[in-house]
Length: 112
Image (cartoon, rainbow, N blue to C red):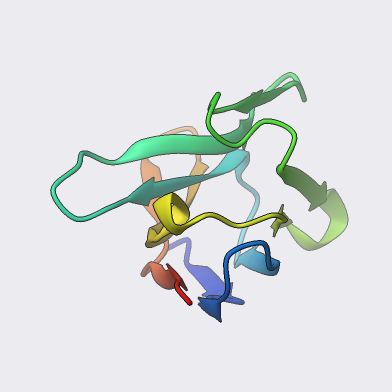
């Protein structure tokens, strides 16, 4: 019954910035962002644990920042200094007590 609504994807130039948003319809935990590039497996980009700590992929540390608004059940991903290698479909993730939910995915393309 939980739905995740993503926004903010699009086209950016190398060195540019994008901000992704994901809003959940109900109370969820451990929200985060994954991505899947062509020919690659889905990987964690940034996420919150249930305890409130953050995890980042080594490839995005120092460039991406995850934040959240608990009252709105919304998580954000600020992406700065984008690289061509960041091109992927980005998926929002959230957990309930019973299952894991995924957003529809939003395309991020970094190109000159």
